[in-house]
Image (tube, rainbow, N blue to C red; front, side, top):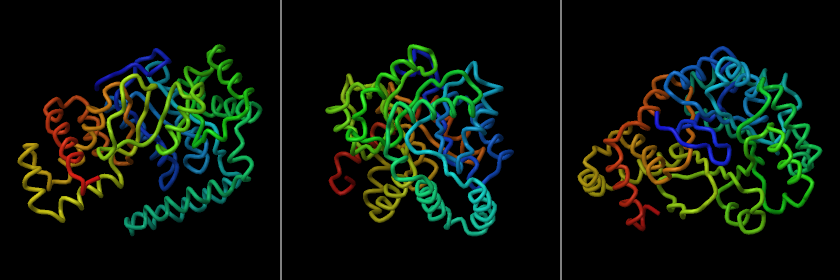
Length: 325
């Protein structure tokens, strides 16, 4: 597995990181722990979680995993969207949703979207949008306890906007947490459309930025803050796959240009993930899966040098095609 420095933390970690948003959702604790171990065995050493993930239970699950692997792993968690208050309700929802998803896989996205809305709705509006030192301190201590660690490597303000970050005492608390060793580095994890505004108006919060990036997005200019990216695949994969399937001539030409059969979904997904790594050489790229074979396949992309040239060429083809963008 390729490695990189985890930005301002100075720690070394894997280029590919594992997103933990699906843990403790439609699968229980034992299966979630098995997923984490599959990722670890595949060479992944960076894990991304948040208090709201898994109906509020993902941090605790990751903490149980970290208790066995903390010395050679890095972890990101977040502050800004609290866990749901009524966890018993969400446990019941999970027990119902799991069998539905297994029988009707097409329902997965709708259920996941509904769950996210429900989790956010379970918090008071003021809690969701209030970024203060007092609430941050309570959130950090809660996360450290759940994760069974005395520090997190990266702590992100979850879905924050520039307008949210007006409390100077919050910035002082973040800086003090780094000085005390409780946080390796802090930053913002938000929508990619908010990033430019955050950099322009709140640069002190932006030593680390986490947001979406896929083969459809432009190259990030040199000198930008350390970045972590997610969603290199998901809906973007479907978008590119459907675009090529609808234009057989383009599919033929692009397959010829890359030297790869882009009609094969496994090849296309590998190239899209590799493009995220190649076009963002200093970044950590997150992915998520509950399937051990897919975890191993995605992890293998990191070290597969034969994919670099075709992935770069696919990126160039996408950006030379106005219809694709």
